Image 1 (spheres, rainbow, N blue to C red):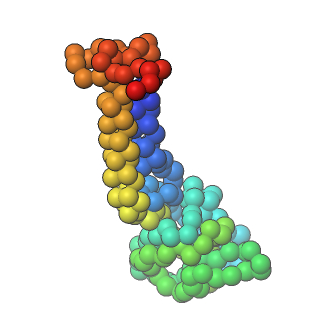
Image 2 (cartoon, rainbow, N blue to C red):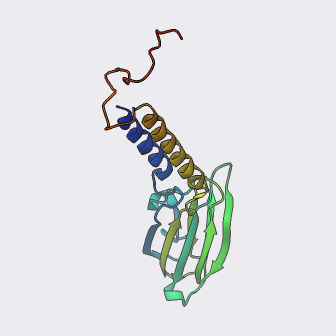
Image 3 (cartoon, rainbow, N blue to C red):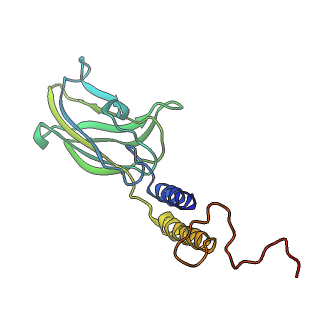
Length: 191
């Protein structure tokens, strides 16, 4: 019975240290999306690409890093406008706007807002846009594991010693029936 309790305690400690991993928890694998889009001439239908990052499957949270890589006409240009922003409390720009023919950079996500990106063609010509976004979660923080693992090992070892202390020395007799060891004094006797 006590060995089952010990095993359950050890398993609970190990699960607490291991934790789970979702798309943007520390140590989670990167999430990537790439594509191409034809930007129509300025002020015509589809002259901009304006989407939520969530629409691409990016569960952004504070501390994540977004790798941004895009090119217009294979990097030959002309330049277009690019921006990362939110529409919470009006419109707040977090990156840009910049006017470039290509961009390869990273951006650290400052909070857990619903971020959007916007590509806008300011020219009178249709342009071919190719883009890739990769979302990296922050690295796993092992500092808590360096505390929990020794503590769990200490608890498990203490539990083991406590279980062993309750068993009589000898050939491993089972004392789970509640019988006292033969040489132990009775609690009813007075000295």
